[in-house]
Length: 345
Image (tube, rainbow, N blue to C red; front, side, top):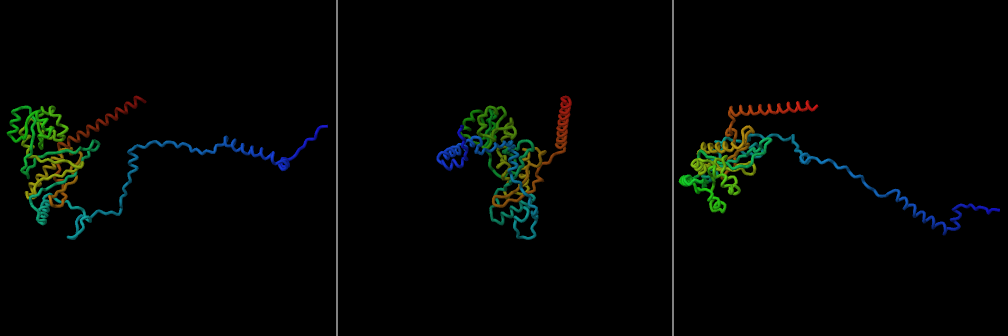
């Protein structure tokens, strides 16, 4: 006879023998979580972000610059005050004719009890832009004023290999005259001068001085390189020199306050005409702002339009011809491009 099969509930067994059942249950409970951790990861990874295309530096700079907001509540300042006592910043700065401004400067001198023998200075602001071309670089200019206001004679060095020309230069006021033998004393600082001129044949022989002389190195453009030595000496001994500072500013004297007004105005006109030679008239006015002052007075703004050179009829006609030629070249290029496209298609 077969033995009877005993069936019982696990709860009764665990109640009767808790020591045998509970360790196994504890073992399974410890294994199951570790097995589940292998299947399901608890680590949290973020998806890698896509790289944004780099923007152009110019666009980025333009976006970073804050846009200037226009104030709709600002009104233009009145031009003339209605009273004798007023705040200058509440009105537009007046602009005078040159003769009127000079009379005001002389009145200021009398009221301030200062010496009438003082310099008259002008300040010019230049427009160095050249449209699509590179802007003009600061330059040093020289001009012969119609009315001299100083007795100073500049020191001039003449470079020439001809002994007769060198002797002629010394007779007419040259401080030093000679050939390559002057290079070493100039580099050592033994010879110093205000201007350096020479004949064209010496241009290649004095190249060691280019780095030291810089803008004073003899050049054909400023008239310091020519075969006419006497003419160069007559000009550079008494010429007036001016320089562009801070990128686009010129501050230079043009006369003495005790000089007649017409002589000071003539010197002013000569300086502005010479400055305007460094930029073609087709790019617009070169001098954008002009003011005048003395050594002990405030500056007064001047009307500059009357001093600016004007284009002649011939220059205007040449510019029109040049513009038409450029337009024709552009049209020809566009026609050639269309023909190539048609052939390729």
